Amino acid sequence: MDVLVVASAESVLQQARQVLQRWQPLLTACGEPPADDGDAADVNIALVCQTCSNAIQRTETTGRRMEMLQQQTEVAEAERNPHEGEAARLQALAEEAAATLAALDARRADLAGLVSMLAELDAGFGRTGVQSFALEGILGELQERTQHFLEQLASGFSLQLAASRPAAAAPSTAVERITKTVLVRSRDPSNGLAMLRERNLRQLSGGERRRIALALVLGFADLISARGRLRCNLMVLDEVMQQLDEEGCARVAAVLRRLPHTTVLLVGQANTYVAQTFDAIDVVVKQGGQTTVEVAP
Image (cartoon, rainbow, N blue to C red):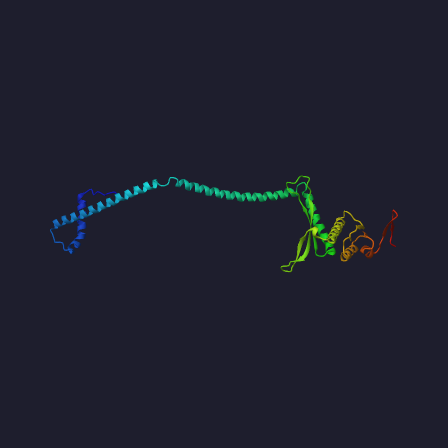
């Protein structure tokens, strides 16, 4: 603490007299015996000086204590963990690295999606891309036309056609395959609503497989005729009513009668539903090593 030194003794004496004048009423009230003005002034000045001296000493003592505490504080600060600052710096670097990693992960996800899309485009516009596109379009149309006949031959059945692409690791000689999925309409036991359930082809009866096969054949013939590739007024069907019950045979006969072909030639066994239903029956007779055909009139 800086101590202001009074340069002039007269200035100090003058200040002491002013303090004495302010304290004089208080001293009179305390019953101090009057004294000569000069002696009283000297005594009072001495009292004031002593008081100031004591105050200055206490102030200096307090200042020294504050300086000592400041020094102790500085020593304590210097003796703190020297690695604390380095730890804070490393923590900041770790947080920055985590933020960078999160940004890179997001970018990687975006690039993965872009790569997947480009792979699909490459597959679509590659050597077999156009063929695959055309095949999928034809399959969709074939499925629609097949379903038209299947609804007449076997109500409650649905056939889905899809092209299965070879895996990326498959050899270059691998080809696409057409998968056929049969759906059967049934009721959900939990709520009674109608729903389609997938059925394995092996779970179908012989008659059901026969109806689905016939619907696919008729749908394919209708597709070819609609595209103008092949037009024929004759259709030949061999044993299409085999393994069918009477109701199935009646459905097949009704569908065949509505076909636009001029002639539908159906091959069947004698004394069967075929021989009893259609308009003209030509009989093939095999006897004595010879085969003859008896044409209906």
